[in-house]
Amino acid sequence: RPFINTPQATGADQAVGFGLVGFSLLLFTYYTIWVIVLPFVDSDHVIHSYFLPREYSVILPGVAALILLLCVGTFIGVITWKNRKPKKVD
Amino acid sequence: MTKLLEWLLGVSLIGVAWGLVTFDLLDLQLPPQYRELAWPMPVYLLVVFGCYSLATVGYRVATFNDCEDAAKELQAQIKEAKEDLKKKGLKM
Figure 1 (cartoon, one colour):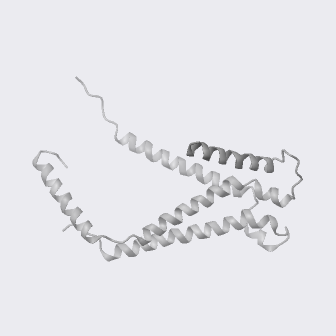
Figure 2 (spheres, one colour):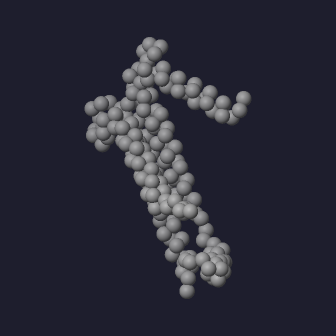
Figure 3 (tube, rainbow over the protein chains, first blue to last red):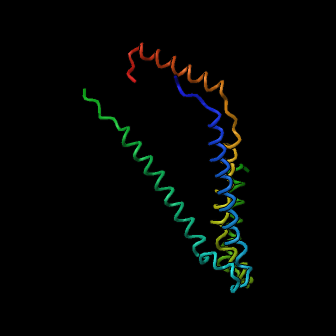
């Protein structure tokens, strides 16, 4: 018989969904402290040891964006390659 | 003025303000902390927007209700379509 949505599907959906929410909140908090808060904290405060040098707050998102673009481009390339059709011979 | 022009104007103004502060083009002698705060701003805003988008998608996935009836109906329609196409000679 064909497989239909079971109540379990909601559980997995909720786990993934709320996982994404939690991850976004963590990332937002860490990044906001790094970019907005740290410049106003004394340079000898211990909190600075939990953060990379400031340049990385721009370099890392840049690298992440590049990798994302590469993945998207590769995916499109692979799909296009798979769907190439041979020319018709008359 | 079209919405596009409005947006472009707004973004340009903000961009100019950011450039002035980051590269100190007007010699404003701003305190160093504010200059440190200013230069990552474009990337920061993009990351924050990304986080907001991710959180919105995640929340909508988590709160989307299952539609059992719609799922059953869809499965039945798929079955019907497959049989119909097989009769007409399509290979699956």
